[in-house]
Image (cartoon, rainbow, N blue to C red; front, side, top):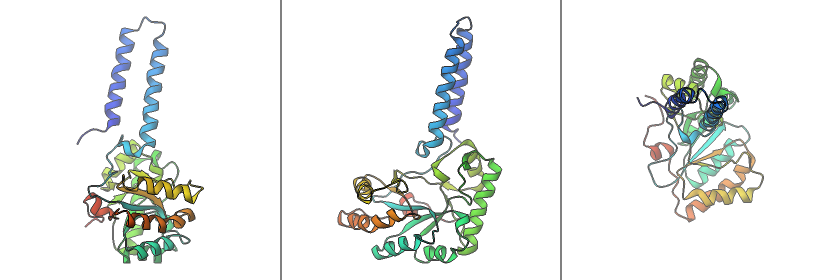
Length: 258
């Protein structure tokens, strides 16, 4: 198995520090230089943690193999909005993938069943979706992912293969955990930032402008602004020949474990 970019960078940084310490041991600027090198390393780590698409710690799929666009929705099931998303998808006869937070299933089992019954895909988005998910121990990450799997399977009789890390943050701990739970990490090549959007007009413009250049779109089924623009966006896709492709077909993998 190939080593991650992280370990290659770490090895390089250590080599640079050792070399610098040896060749410049008499220099009065040695500690400033070492501090600068360490600062660059910390910056690289920050970028690696916060930029899911770089695959810095482990490999994730961020783009598709088919021409078209896959719709993915994070953070449901939501009692106020997920059904509305499903209504719009049904109207346009398109399929999407819902990355489910395990703790949100309780009380929303009917919504989860509806997602499956209407031909959509369910993925694992962790059970807890805690802010510092990427820094807890690999053991706890494994337990959290498996708890979400079990909650989904209890309702649907399906165990998801696809996993999306909370907040799009990664780390060596998540990479280690994913190897143990045997999930495929799935990101995106178009992040809409719909949860931060304040203007429906601007969000719709953003979606339209990038739709034909992207393959996996990240949306959320837990906020009103997404609901308000989704119908118009799907009309735009239809009029402009942008085919909506289910995620499994887009990346060429079955969505559930045998």
